[in-house]
Length: 631
Ligand SMILES: [Zn+2]
Image (cartoon, rainbow, N blue to C red; front, side, top):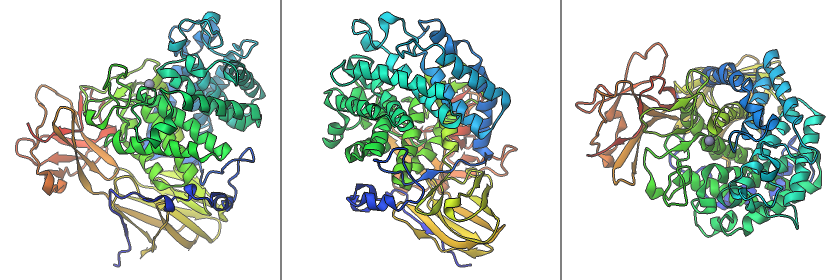
């Protein structure tokens, strides 16, 4: 049979030169104006290249993970008095206690849209109403006492304050809630917050960087929420406030991300390189570009993203951090020379990395951004979620004595479910007149009238645990459709067969494989991938050469159930003649759970089984993803 698969080099960029990046070209307005149906709430900005299509249902691996959160953690947090205690009886017991309700409303709103449930919805509506009821007449909606509120210039603790931060999440949660469950009360509460922020930090008033940690970087995360408020209300004063705050960030010698990126300083200097906050501020920059057309915002966000991708992510897709200098803590980006498989990834960082990647994906249409979101989701993010559905890990590492799952309401346990819900809404998209197949996870995607076809595509199979998937087109009548397939993370080749016929796939400038054809109702496309086994070597700050293995999009790891009789494995692989297929052998048959498994072939290590990183850890034992390649 003629094989018409598409191949690419694993390490090649999807787009290598600025000339190939349409968003950098002067002709961007003309290019984007052609994107039918993609419009802005306000008229002046740059429309996104892609509009995500939330699937009607999500099954398989991601569906199970969503069910776990929705069934167990969602009510466990929503019914916990801690969620609203700081608002109803201030002060909060913890300085950033106020963030949790906003994060919970965000994730729960998306859960209620995707999987309607009367009890869950009642809890959501009730929580929103109780939160709004605590707002002060001046607009304050936080957990601090008047002496310590962000609008009090005499607060001696202002630099350690998380009060603006709380309002970032309150705004975010309420605005996402209103998007799906229109609520004038929620919008009015947000406007009152916006006006309080404007009076406090607007032109001629207090500098935002006087409040909050990391020279104000933590407070600057409110940028994205303020732009969302502008998008919802159309009130220019909020866009001006956001721009004013961004100017303050750029003038601040301890932050100034745009200049730092232009000078090649890397992501370790801005606000001490605090990973979560820096990525969250870049979400604000992406929104500012969307509404102002100022390309420097987007360029900075993309440069930050590229730096993180290149120097600060693990093979599991999580952005690692390390306290390299005394001013930093374990959650700050450190120079690449500080790499080590025990450096932590804050689950908030993984979540924000996924958010930023998906935001840039929608904005630019480039496949590379979605690929990194996928890598992080399929490995690092789900590795932070306990299979008991309630617990999450705060810090996760490739190599750790245990996952460290806990039930407590922490920043990270409040962030992780947001990544699950958000990612589930990005499995497919429309753009440039095509249906973009961003994921091969089982899902049902309704077709958009903009595509000129009625019906739905049903994606079936066991991806990512097997290297293939089926797309069944349940169309009401034959229709010509253009599909853009994204090559999954770590995948070298794919082919598409319809009715026994291999289909010709054409690479697109944005990094997809295009298939244009007339689909008949019920026709099925079989998508087959080449999942190579790969070895990834990296030298740690201890001088050790560490090696990890991947199979397609999945990173493999050892679940060390009994640590006493499973000492750390030291491998002695010939890196120059790397042939992972000789170092690992598939274990057949697979066990009942159907997860793929491999066995090390090195003498003395044949008892070492490797499995998908995201699917282990329930034993409570250690996780080992990277192995020393010498003693
Ligand atoms: Zn966190």
